[in-house]
Image: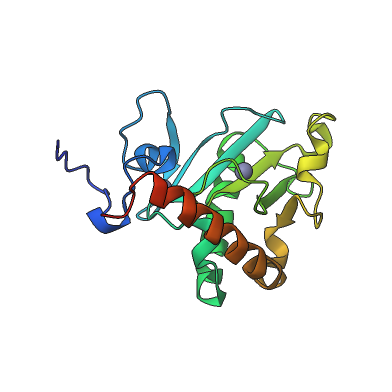
Length: 175
Ligand SMILES: [Zn+2]
Ligand SMILES: [Zn+2]
């Protein structure tokens, strides 16, 4: 196995080879351009943008969204939101009241690696996709309510975890 030491790469235990977001975070996906990064976070464009600006912020560490969100992650979530807003700012967005920042709840997630959606202008979110990004619905939990989010998500997460564990076991993820 190749062992390319990128400056901020993960320790092996937090890296899941088959996870596309782990690949992106470790700069092993050539198709994805990282827009901004910090020591433990990475921001890139959503592959299916639903607004003129649509970015994802992920932790480098493979936080299996389902498993790990608890109150200890509030600081991480705050920093994810800040990075997303910094990127919007870099991209020339000035009206921070017309943005949308949040998580999809399981089972409405596309990738099992914690990711924060950052969209702007919120008023221009594609109307066909709007249902997916409507705050405090079963589809989308905004980061402003992260405490509540944790409470709502945990039971759902565990449900989802069971499912994923079954799937992962089949794929021989666990050695
Ligand atoms: Zn991952
Ligand atoms: Zn998502």
